[in-house]
Length: 55
Image (cartoon, rainbow, N blue to C red):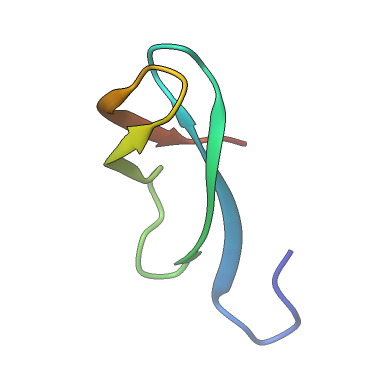
C-alpha cells in the first residue's frame, strides 16, 4: 500500500494463459486508474504473453 501522500502503489502482474504471478512493479494510481496490461515473458509458458494486474 502507498504511504500517505504518495501516488505510487505496488502491483502484481499475472500471466493470462497460465495464471502464474510473475512480476511485481509499481504504478501511479492517480494517472493510471484502470488495470495495467503488459506483454511480458512468462517462464512457465516459455513465451511472451499478456500479463494483467491482479487485485
